[in-house]
Amino acid sequence: MKEQKRQPAAGAPRWERPAAGSLRPATDLVAAAEQLLAGSARQLDSAALRDALLDLYDFWLTTKATEIGITATSGFAIVATGGLGRGELLPYSDLDLMLLHDNMPPDVVGEVAELLWYPLWDANIRLDHSVRTVPEALRVAGDDMSAGLAMLEARHIAGDADLSSLLIGGARRQWRTGIASR
Image 1 (cartoon, one colour):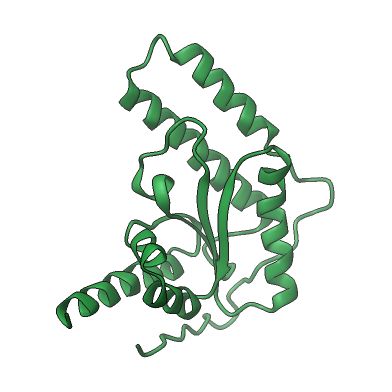
Image 2 (cartoon, one colour; image 1 turned 120 degrees about the horizontal axis):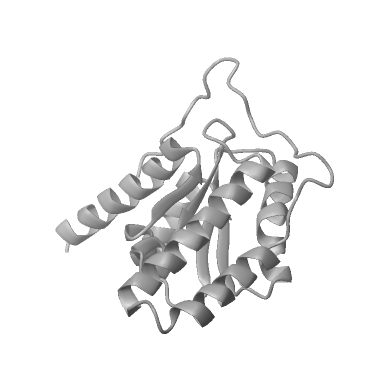
């Protein structure tokens, strides 16, 4: 498959390190989920509870993305796969997330990943995660059927939507081409 290279617009903002002391932990996410589960178990049907959990996790992830500098022009995107990507998150499910980047320097990628993953780990939220460029993710999707299937259900959460679209569209094209060749 031919790699698609994106060129950032001239003068486009890139990722900027957040101010020290400005980051919140994920314990607020855990507390909100527990409150939702405790209070809503008797008031919401399963579909409404699922939707409320999805809204909660999406809100926390988009807020965290903004907090750590993942924006539309940062060269990063947060992509959900698995239950979160499908919109079928269950109580106590793990989060399947990909931090997608546009060939950013390894030290910057590592710092952004730590700012995103560590609050979730510190709050004991189970996390199935990866950090990749679009070409890397598509190679994995081509080599690993379960990863490929997960990317078919991927959903953009925050950051560079064009980067997410390249992944999602590429995974679907790759899947259709693979099916057609069988």
